[in-house]
Image (tube, rainbow over all chains, first blue to last red; front, side, top):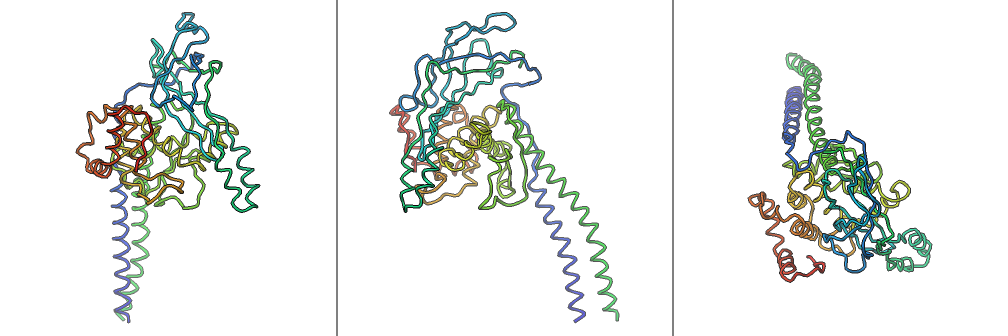
Length: 186
Length: 235
């Protein structure tokens, strides 16, 4: 019996130690050297000087028809833009912007969503702009979900709200898009 | 009598050795975890800075293998990107780590937009996850490119880690093959230089993706040839 206990204890000590070493090896195996790669655009966000650039679409944009991801559309500058009292963009100047992402409208009142980015402003680097602009369609979830839950007392009727779709994105020529230019960023 | 002594000695050894070894191993364990956390923080912060994301996002390494089946999505509630060990084990390069983080950052950023501090948008992302899954994949590609990582790593990472379900009609998630095809299409159109000078062409995982996506890639080739703008119905 004592022999059995002795062997058991020996195995326990040996097993305990090896299991710890094994797990520490496993941990070491998952640790990789960090290799920070060289990247495209430099950044230094120290400076806070910011110039807003107000834009509007030249023609009305609708997510329901004719809007394709990746396409460039025309925006016009709606107010003169000055930097250090020097005119950098004149009212009426045309600026190209890209349709970055389109989220189509969905069931239960989910609205469509379009993101515009990569505005090409002459003389201004992309690294000096914070420019992503998102426009959403009408969000019908606010009343569709309460309606759905109210109707669940009648079997299967609540599911009918699935067929109510959210609104499409309409970007009118009167909608103002603000892009921020940081002149002292690299 | 001698056997009894031996047992006492062994018991003493067990109690003496155990704490010292445990202490050494605890240090090693903490150092290893710290190293992982540092790596995640560096790649994650790179993605935030190079994409000029002016929102706070925190990266947390979690020793748990995977997220609980029923749990609150911390991406949307606490703006925390939680990296579970089970997934981290599949990360081999910084590009792949960036792929994993960029995907999650895209979800976190969505939680910042909209009314009530982004509450409504967060609920919509959680409920309409199928639609936003594709959007987050595309945003992840953009984030990676802007930060200087190769977006093909996203394909490699998803191909390695996301299982393929049978159907997606009634699921909250897309079939992985569809996601991969959409990412491939996005890169083809928006960042073709990564396919022209393909650094991943000798990567076995990328080759595996090419093998299992032949029919989907043929559909894309036909779309490019015809100049169509219709959305492809991928398998």
